[in-house]
Image (cartoon, each protein chain N blue to C red):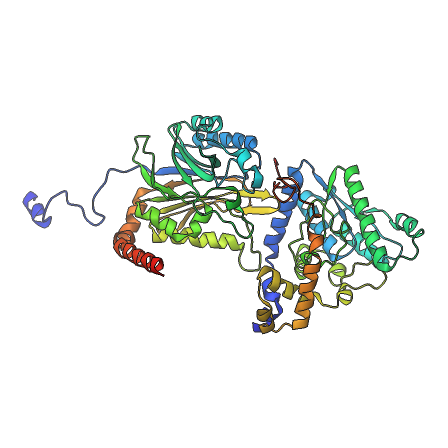
Length: 315
Length: 281
């Protein structure tokens, strides 16, 4: 009986069937998205952040993401230098302390030593600012006037969520609102191997003609799903709500999985704390099915960029 | 399809449910942020103020909306009847303040005034009543000017244009009609020809020499889409009409801006001194 069994099972008795290897299960990343309505008042917003940090910690979130300029509000104009924070400020220290073992991404005006004001998203982990993304694309057209008041960042850099906590980390990158409208930004992060795009946003709603909801909501729906699918990565999009000077911020925060499907979505208009678990196996499955990142021809891209740049230089 | 695009009606078609939700949210958020809970609205019996009162009632609750009816002795009595109909439909308690004595007290001393001066005076008297009532009631004044009239300057400076918040200032007149129907403004208000009712038989469209459908379509293409004159001609709009509308937009620019300030210092108000209206709120 034993021999017969060995004959039928050509190879090892432990060889797996379809489905392949068995990995040590890796824990998911529990993310919370704080779809809030910031006021144009730093003190009120700081208190609100502290409250939500407590709630998210209580609900065992490992990462809490706030919208763009969550600490200050958006339509700041001349308030920019008045609400700006230095990296070592007491306000940021109090948030880092409150977060404890949970990581947070929040938005503020960050003032540099040489007195530049950045629209920044800070990744705070293990009690310190572990990564800063300064918004590169400052919209200065239509209702936007960011470049009048702020300095632009100059890079998109990967950082690792959970790198300090000892758990397995998640390579991530941040795109703030308008950064998303420039696909080269997402490409640069994807090239650095990110599995998660974190996208804090303060997107004003406009376009109310009879065509399935807000025009801006449709744009972000398309972008978040497309980015997730093309880069086979998670997109964590956290947009604010509320009204400022008659401008409506529509919300619609969401997590899109690496296959482009919407996994969790907040309501439009109202405040909400949305939770979603990111599963690393989903990233692997998407990249097995669609090896787009493997097949990306960076050499072609680089060579063509060089050629175009050189031709421009000669012109 | 081509006809709909040329007339502009397709592009001006609203998602009425979405806009209603957005405007009710606007009223509630912007009123309460300032520490107020109530509003006053000058209710003429026309479609603009009826829509604003209806939205406010829906947003804040009818008990937080004070509609003020301010007829002058030459106002069409049917206007007041329509205003009362609107109040009945939305459970609002109207307050009647006849502006005849205060307007006539002035023009008794200036009997030579033409009807334009008289109309403007009435609009400004109504404004002073609204702001006084807002102080009496700890309330904010809601504006009722639509985008069409603001763009062509068919309004009285510091009169009907004055308010704390205007929920319908980004809606063209044809969109106001559409939304008014959707929120249940009574048919007698939505179906009558629009009138400022400054004198008997006045009609907006006759006075402007243009119908709102054409006016809105041209404004939409010029203002929102920033189309060129050539593009408008190609869409089938009459050159002379487009020129006239564009001239009215330009010559009424002063009505849409705060008064000019002679610049002297380094930080002149509204030029370098720029803060959001919701500063600290």
